[in-house]
Length: 450
Image (tube, rainbow, N blue to C red):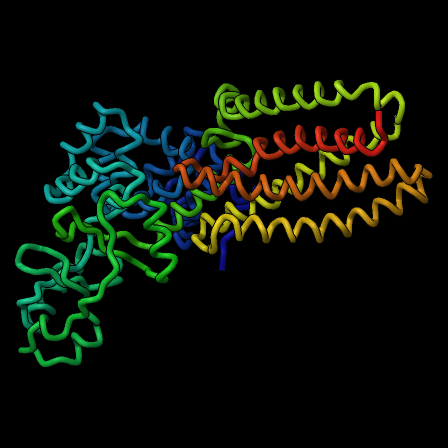
C-alpha cells in the first residue's frame, strides 16, 4: 500500500531533525520505501534534507539519491565529499552511478572515480561515460549474466552463482562465444532440467533481440515496447556483449520523450520544469511566442486588406474568430493523431492515402458543423442567405485545408529528420489562422461580390 507523505508527517520529521533525534527519525522511517523517503526529502529545506540523507545507511541512501528531484540531489551532492559520493556509487548499478557522476563537475568526477573502492566497478563506470547519454551505450548497465557456449550445465550454474552476486535482478542469461560475441540466450527451465554434462551450445536459444551501443534511446524504447521485453542486451560494433538495458531505464526514456513532445506541442522549445528560473522559462517559451506574434500580425494584415468588405458586411467580422479557431483546432487534431502514429510507429499507408482519409474525415465533420452553423446564423442571428452561405462554405473549406496541413507537415518533418511534435503547437495553429482568414474573405468576395 502506498505511503502518503502528509504535511503532519513532514512537520513531525522537521521537529525531530531540529532536536537531532537520530534514533527516533530512523525508527519513523524504518518501514517506509526509499521512494517515499525521497519524496519526503524533496519537501524539506536543503539543510534538513542533507541531515536526513547523512543519517540513513548507505545502501538505502544510494537508492534515495536516484529518486530525488534534480535540484535537491544537486544540493546534497554539493555538500558531500568525493569519498562520500564514491561510497554511494559503490552501492549502485553502473548505469545509475553514471547518471549521478554526469551531474558533477569535471574535477569532481575525477576525484570521485579515484575514490571508488571496487576497481572493476570504477572501470565499468569510466567505460560507460564514453557513450552519449541518448544512446543504448549511455543507458546500459554492466551488471548482467553471461555464460559461454562451450561450458556444460554444471559449470554454467557455478558461474551464474558467482556473477549473480553483483546483479540485483536476473532478467536473462546471455550466451557468448570465446570472443564474447553474443550468440543467444539461455532458458532457465532448459538449464535446470538438463543433465549437468549437457553442453550449453546444445540447449541455448539462438534467437535473441539486441541493440548496438550507438542505437538511439528512443529506438531502444520502441523495440522493447514492441516485443514486450523486460531487458535487452547491448553489443558493440564487433557483436561483443557489453551490457544490458532494463525496463526501468526505458520507462524513464518514454516519460522524458513524452514530456518533451508535450512541451514542444505547447510551444516550449527547451526541456524545462515549473521550478526553473524565470530566465530559463523565458528562453524556452519566447521563440514560439514570437512566431505566434508574427503569424497573428500577418493574419491582422490579411483581415485589414478586406476592411472594405467588413464595413459593408459587418456580420462577417463577428465570424472571423470562429473560422480562424476552427482552422487551428482541426489542424492540431490532425497533426496530433499523425504525430502519435509516428511516435508509435503505427502509421501505415502512403502520404496520399493518409491525406485522402483526413480529407474525407474533415468533409464529414465540417458538413455536420456547417449545417448546424447555417441554422444558427439564419434563425438565431437572422443573417441573409448569402452571408450564411459564405460563412458555412468558408468553414467547410477551411476545415478541409487545415486537416490536410495538419497531416502533411508532421509527416514531411519526420521524413527530413525533424521532430514532428513541433507541428502540433503554435506552428500549425498560427499557419491555419492565416490561411483560414484568407480563405474566409476570399470566398466572401466571390459570393458577395465586393
